[in-house]
Image 1 (cartoon, rainbow over the protein chains, first blue to last red):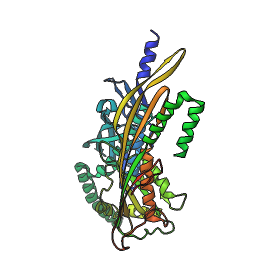
Image 2: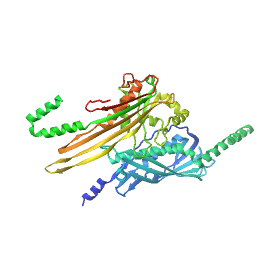
Image 3: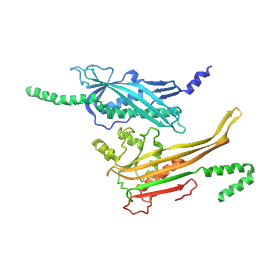
Image 4: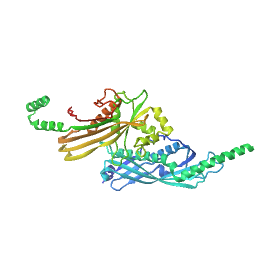
Length: 209
Length: 261
């Protein structure tokens, strides 16, 4: 009887995703962004018990990716605990607040697809709030990664590699796609219009003083 | 032939019972060969310029859903092309990380036109220049098992263990490499390689594998040809005029050292 849990554990696949992500070669947007990574995101673990028990801890790795990407695509980045309204007295106010969450993870293993590849899909919901704490965009973004089966390579190593490549793909979508979200594009246009007016009024107040 | 006769004589005298096994092994060893077809196209017959401080990067295509060009294969070509330091080759992963996200599978340029648009970004152009990347070689294709037959099984008992049976499988590698010149923004040539081979596993007690080195032969074929694009003395002989585009096609049977045109 004592052997049963041992045998079950031997049949399951446990992966802790361990990828590293490079800096993005991109021109940062001149805004201050606040990144809210809550516990359900930083400690996210995917579990599947369909045909084979698979447990994949990707919270730490995806937090590392989001942290890196938002540091690179904005001129300033801060980590926040929650979305909070920025007041006139807030020092170094935040322009945008980002709250990502995992909507869905799907795996395809060679024994299911008869293909020689491990595939991973991750769907994120990236919520964006303005400095008043009002929601301005709800972006559903999916990422895909795969790796080929290799001789003498474990299932764990293959899934780790496929998930790391899916996370790199999520980074691509964030870097290239974030500015292209219609609501974000409108927000940037609005900000760009406001900026000269702000400069004008600052100049005027400077003249008066 | 002489070697075979000697081994025949040796087994007949010292191990008469092993003669059929030796015969089988010889049959398998000769059967376990690979055949490679290389098709090469060069825009000019002259060697490609590579100035001091300039380097080449070899990249694998990974945009297709059902396969990916293996990173090991790209490293293998890189090793062959580097030719002991004669040519500077930037490792693929280092390049991907330096230019993240512009060459990731989702958005990597498939055509030169798209590449030229990417190079319009001053940040990317500046990095290409600072790293001295002159040529980009895109490799597309993969190695797959095309056929399998036979079975063998192994058993372990307290008194010992062993395997019995016979299995064979065929593998095929098909790859194409395209050379882009990032300075002139044009294509300098292509090399296509097709390698096929059969492997066998005979198990009478202990398993005896006879593995055909399909992928490494494809790497050798494509690597040597690419070397001919850049280096003097590398296999790139031609009979066509220097100004005309050149297409070389050759068939060779290696592993036994036999080459056929």
